[in-house]
Image 1: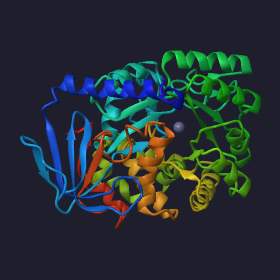
Image 2 (image 1 turned 90 degrees about the vertical axis):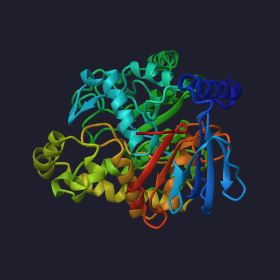
Image 3 (image 1 turned 180 degrees about the vertical axis):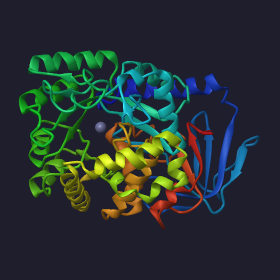
Length: 449
Ligand SMILES: [Zn+2]
């Protein structure tokens, strides 16, 4: 039901109901919060506005602009933010919710309590929207729909419910997720299962197209083309997990909307660049996901960073520092993972310079990929790859809201859009690590505590 430009009217109505529901559920109609005198990065990529004021009411931005122009309504709660910077709430285009506790991945962990705790964790770190990419229990639709009726309980979630793979394909052998991915053999089956997903209320159809270094049979072009075509008939976006350049080309030719991982087998070429631009495809790098596959062997300094520690319990931290460190140090895929990251870093810079739409996503949620902290690490790695902090912020707000086709209501900080924003004590354009220095987070105009 999300998402189609042919259904714009229904779509806006749905979001209007969301905001109205929010206001009445929380008695917010009278509460107006005004953020004054902050530097404003609105997500559109232009120069920041110094001394800006944001008026938030009923979950939305009622007014925004220079403090000299924007009037403060009477009886509003005024917050002076002199010296601070406001940026859009981060939208994560590749995440997973609910299936992990500590470092253990199991669908038995998938409870309302666990899913909501993870959405809350995202929000505390300034990630105000996330997707959940193909490993969900149907329960997520209930949680999402409650959010859309006005409950503010953490990052807004968009779901792929259960993703598609080949029979016995990746990632069916990963711990704890056997039976979650829909193992599909024929186009007819693919179409029927896409219909089932759409009927259950998915926002996205996700597919895995990955042999995992020749270990598994991949979903082939006939079946993935059927998934994409049927998904579009049912107004679902299509996202693919992939690894190889040749698969990226095939999927984009078949109409794919979002590439949800870096191409890691070789450098991208002009043919792919032209296809991505022609089809307006969004490319998401998940660099932190790649680095997480080997970095624990090197005892990264951030394990002791309070900004990381606030989201991790002591037992999990110990598991990262000792057993996972040992496992990664002797991982037979270690060298290939290191090489894959280097190719991924080169590719995102090349694609960005060529004018391809660069989105933002981390693939957080699976074990040792920490919701919240890793989105900040992803931003850091994108800057390390050669993007500017402004490009990264724009990817995580404007581009991602466009990729999800919710840009009329979310993403950039503009009058009439959702009041989802992060206040930073220091300017992230000076140093992307300044996103760690969070003053406050507002989701639907409410301060996340
Ligand atoms: Zn993923």
